[in-house]
Amino acid sequence: MEIISATALISINETFFIQLISFLVFLFILNRVMIRPLISTMDQRKEYLADVKTDIEKAKSDLVNLNRELDRQHSRVLKEAHASIQKLDDEADHRASELLESTRLQITQLRHETEEKVRQQLKAARAQLTGEVDALTTIIMEKVLHRRLQ
Image 1 (tube, rainbow, N blue to C red):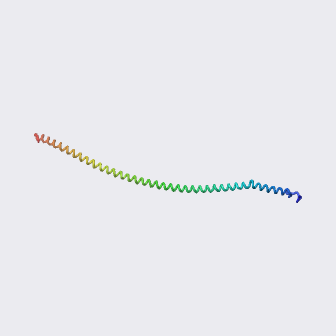
Image 2 (image 1 turned 180 degrees about the horizontal axis):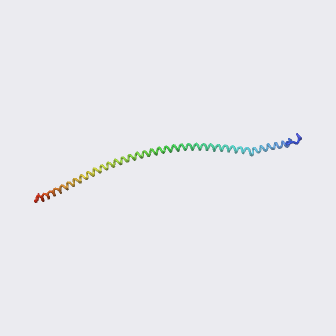
């Protein structure tokens, strides 16, 4: 059965409906086999990229936080180091003053001991010289007087 009998570019007959039905079946199969899986894959890719972007932003914020924490720890360690250096300097000054004072005391003690030894040596020398002076004066007087003294 022919509806239109004119020569045209498109003739509407039963083959047209069969072609239309086969085209729609082809579209349905193409949609099921190719387009839906492709759209699903694209959606999965978008989700994956969104997750990666979220992970990157989270990693950046973690990096910023870690840098802040590192700066805080660095400044704290520097403060502790300065405090330790100041404490060690104070201890060194105190120890140096103690050593200086003990050295002064030792010098004073050694000076007194040396002065005492010198006094004792002078005393011993005077005692020895006194005995010798007496003997020498007796000899000199005997020589000057030309006689023997008792």
